[in-house]
Image (cartoon, rainbow, N blue to C red):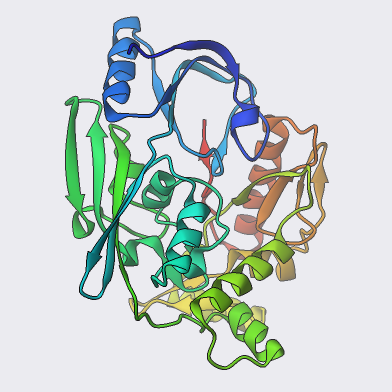
Length: 338
């Protein structure tokens, strides 16, 4: 079956931020073969390509995109039993939290702390998503990607994916499009309960030995409490946590007692961007037209319903400028700009 190329498609409805213009062309891809067809068509038309997953980490410009947007909707979950648990091959277009829910129901450990993160499985690998002390890379053993330059498919072992903090080879190399991800998940895992919010949650509840389902439920409740209300667009955490030399960290710690940071063991510290934006800059609830900072979480920029992409970008740039001028820390966007 030939692929169906759509024209002049509004992109705001395909992203969680809910802003931006139209894609000149868009195609929904459900198979790797269709992905190859889409790439070939774009080449024939001499058009740029942008690959879109769940749209949860993307900010589309008001001008839209002049080329072909390829929306990855490759589905499928195959569970293979192994002696310690399961090896699961998942299509890149599967909804991430649906997959997490399935693994918890099957008593498979490893990604329960990543519950309720929006987006797709492919996006999880590209971004190496992380939350509450867990990164996706800890459970990913292989990633299948289509190379749009070589027009061929290749499997990458986990250690070849160049995973880092919200980074991977797939984020850096735009020719690689994730199509499937393989996870290794045990039946007997170790709970990750060291994160402060998680500790406080279970202490308040009086739970000392939480089950796998208890942990998922806790993460969902914690995350929900920090999310904007219904009808408010967001792309989640807009900025990455900045990494600074230990000397600079010590200076900031002396200046701002209570500064939250993770010492990385390589003479650097990863600062909590949320803590800085909240405690040092008091940004919760700040607005720029229809754009603003969430009143529930200072790291989340929001569309109150009528924001333009430019208003969001202007607000983000002003925040970056203020942080660099006041404390000499450079913030980097986690959100992908289109």
